[in-house]
Image 1 (spheres, rainbow, N blue to C red):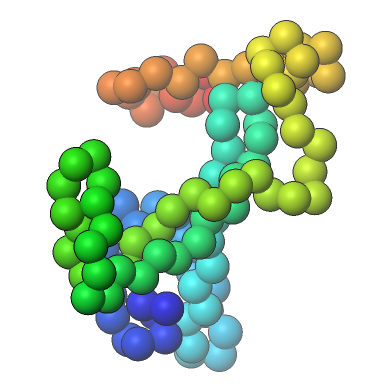
Image 2: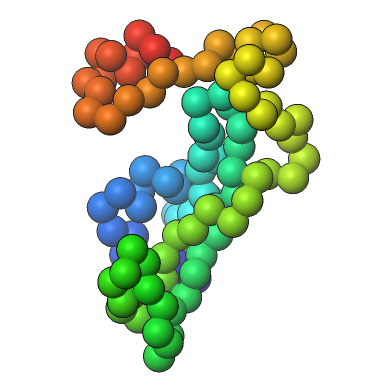
Length: 107
């Protein structure tokens, strides 16, 4: 993993990790990623090395990347807004370009 090799975590990647300090040593973990109806997703590392990987039609450079690999396997899954509402979960209307104030009101 990137952190095991002493490489820095870039930009947005800080937001998908939480860092604990254990007697001066940083321990890095993935944050839980949620959708608007509270389903949790697993986040894993993808290593591209001397390969031909593509994303959106563009070749990916060698390196480590984060990918969602599926649903967290031990949770109850909500399949729709209606299912969420029936289960007591208010679907969050998170939209692109929201301000912090808008996010705080919705979340």
